[in-house]
Length: 352
Image (cartoon, rainbow, N blue to C red):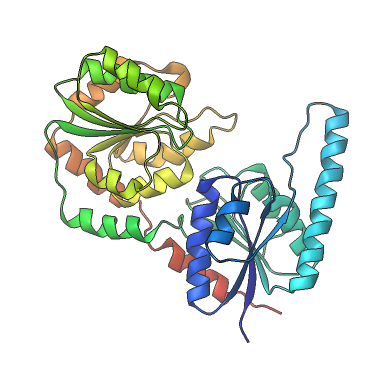
C-alpha cells in the first residue's frame, strides 16, 4: 500500500521550492503526495502546474494590535484548523509535513488533533513562533542548522538538482575572474538598501568589478537610470534571475540578504558572501549567516549600522587565494543531500 502524505507549505518561493524538492522525491519513491496551501498565496497557482493535487483554504497571520484583532485572529485560526481536519478526515494521510510559515500552525495542530504523525522542518537557525509551538507536539523535528531544536534532526535545506550539480562542479574547479564578478541581489522583490549599494559600488569600483545585479520586481528602469548616471558599463541588470544557478556559477562573490534558502544555496556552491541581513526583531537572518562569518567564509554588515567603505575594503582585499580559501570554508558547512536525508526520516516514521 502506498504511503499518503500532505505537505503544508506556501507564501513564498523560499518555502515552496524546498517543499517541491521533497514532494518530487516522495513521488519518485512511490508515495501519494498532496499539498495544503493558502487560496490567496502563490502556491495556489504554482502547485497545480507541477501536477500535484492541492487543497486550498484561507490561512491568516496572527495579529496582536489590540484585543479585537487578537480575538478575530483566534477565530480565524480555529476555522483554518477545522477546515484542515475536514481535509485530513477525507484524504486520510499517513503523515503531515509542515515547512514553516504561519500556514503550518493550524494544519499542524489539526494533525495532532487527528492523531496523524506530524513532521516539521525549520529552515532558519532561529525557529519562528509557529515551529516553536509545533515542536512541542511534532513526531519528528528536522532542522537546517545544528541546535535549533532540542532533539532536532540535522538535515539541512532541500536545494535543487541544478544547485547540487553546480556544487559538485565548483568543488573541483574554482576559477576567479579579473575584474571580480560581483553578484548582487536583494531577493525576488528587491531591496532598496542593496540596490543603492550596487549603484555606489559600480561607480567607486568601476575598474575592479563586473556587476550582475538582480534589482527586484518593478525596479529595473529606476535602477538602470541610476547606474547610467555613473557613466560606466561595468554592470548587467535583471529584474529577476530565473536561472540563479547560472548566476552563482558566474560569480566570484555575492552581496545579498541571508534568508535560509539563499544561505543554503551559496554555501553549497562555495560562494564567498557579504551578507546584509533583513532587519527582524529576532534577527533570524543574522543568525542564519553567523556560522559562515565565524569560520571566515562570509562578512556580515547589519543594515542599521552599514558603512559602504567597509564593503568596498572587503571587496578590494580579495585575491584569488583568499576567495578560494573562503570557498573551501563555505563548502564545509554545506549539506547538499538534504532532500535524501529528509526522505529517509519521513520513511522511518511509524505510520498508522
